[in-house]
Image 1 (cartoon, helix red, strand yellow):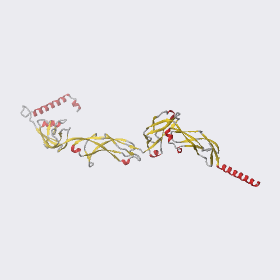
Image 2 (image 1 turned 90 degrees about the vertical axis):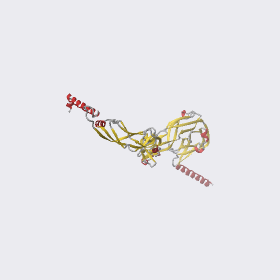
Image 3 (image 1 turned 90 degrees about the horizontal axis):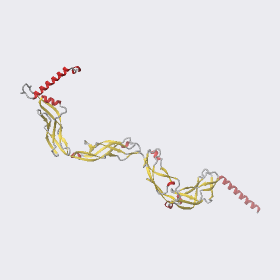
Amino acid sequence: MDKWFHNTWFIKGISLLIAIMLYLVVNMESGTNQPGGLPITHGTKYLGEVELNVLYDEENYVITDVSSETVEVNLRGPQAILTSLSLERPVRYELFVDVRDMEPGEYYVEVQHRNFPSDISVNIQPRNVRVIIQERQTISVPVQIELVNEGDIEAGYTIGTPTSSPSNVDITAARGIIDQIAYVRASVDVAGRNATFQETARIVVLDRNGNELNLNTDPPAVDVTVPITSPNKEVPLRIGRGGELPSGIAIDSITPEPATVTIYGPVPVINEISFIDLEEINLDSITEDTTLEVEVPIPNGVERVEPEVVTITIDVTQEETRVFSDFVIDVTGVPEDYTYSFLSPEEGTLNLNVMGSPTVLGRLERSDLQLYVNLEGLSAGEHEVPLQFSGPQNVWMNTERATVQVLISDTESQESMSFNDESEVEEDEQEVEDTS
């Protein structure tokens, strides 16, 4: 076959045959009375079910019903034209009804056609169709988010309020159909989730009975964000201090804002945390009211802390002194089977000078303060022990002395000494009686 198409005489023969066929077709369409013409052959052709188009005012109206979406078409005319019409691609002919000048209502309209050859007779069934026109309406409806399998998220996690973007969708339809809309819904499955996530969800339009309406929305889908929070609890902040304030300056208050933060993480981890220590404040550089922004450290095992940064406000004032006279020195850490006594000061009391702001000092009670020495690990004998001070924040101790002298005694030795003293007294009394 390939050899034939490369043969010049073969190509010329085919061309001649096509020219003859075209000549015959033209003469058949020119009528039987032409000299030398051939008789015209007529025929019929059934196009079958042809789609029926409805022409209407799409900007203001909606077609809610057409009694037939297709029509049956039979053609009659010259066979050559019917044949060429069958081979026509793309198809140019159209079956339609035109209701562009009609207002909302129900109409029976004649089916029309166009772009068929003029020599063709067109028979259409049905000849008329019923068309219902309704006014077009567009409404904006808020999206309701349905969470599926809420009970199947990971243990200890909680679901916040989901949101969608956009939060509303537009629906355009006939007024009668618009009246059937109850709500629109986007569904998201949260099974196995343990963190906030975003998912695109299809919009479904529902009527009052929960049945889905076949309506398009703009947009057809929304982005749904579902916040999922891990186990959490609030803990207070503790502010460390380092260095010393300049002479004459006292802290009136050091206030974090907020005073507590929320920690998130596994339950066993967060249950062990009672507070969070912030970075130590260097008091050496504080000479006036100061505001600092401090990052909150994340404890080991904790997923995150909110907020991540807190504001610390430091209010300062002029330092004052308040004296607590004859303040009793407490003793801790006394070794077992030992006793103690103060050598200096003998009474175990001294004057305690407390330094701070007037506001803080004015609220102080003796019970808020403690002056003490720790004897833990000391043996029997005389010892010089440093004084230690405990009290509210923002106050300092200033005493007459930094240390005290304490005598630690073994209980057994004391009992022995006491017994010997009593024996000596008894012997002395006996000697007096004998002399008498």
